[in-house]
View (spheres, rainbow, N blue to C red):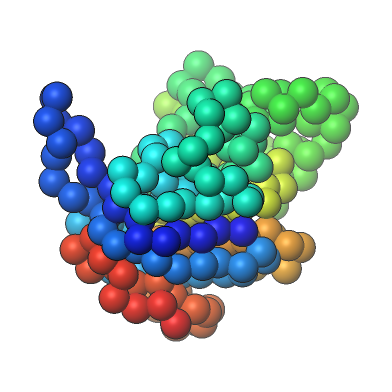
Length: 223
């Protein structure tokens, strides 16, 4: 599903190449696998998730997702690949003028799903995350935790092949965090490959699984 061989990432600073965010990353995640992504702030977790989400391309090494060499792929090939990836962003990225329902429905509409199927799938997903009664609310009318749950529902409603989550429990209480983990594990059981970045050691302890550990942009643990 995912293979990195000597992958590096530099961000551009104006016209110059900026500091190295990631370097010499090499690991594989099998189809249907699960990985915690761990490491201190600034270790490179979000940068790695951006690579896996195909938001940026590696500046060194080789990244293969769904059998496609991302560095060699054309720009026209990337949107179809991204439609197979769900992403829970740390800053939610909800569209402020859309209701919770329409934010969750957005990826399904982009994919051209029938409206009847969209209504059924979105209603069920909002019910699962405990927001059935808030489906008509816009982001500004929702708490941080509610916005996080809308972002999670949007990421998983299309049943992605690869599901990425950047600190998905950061704005949730313990009960909501556990509910989220049940959802992620169910998605994984149904065949999705799941990568979850977290600082929550207690959550990892309650739901043990293999971890990728980053430190200063390098992989220091893969177990």
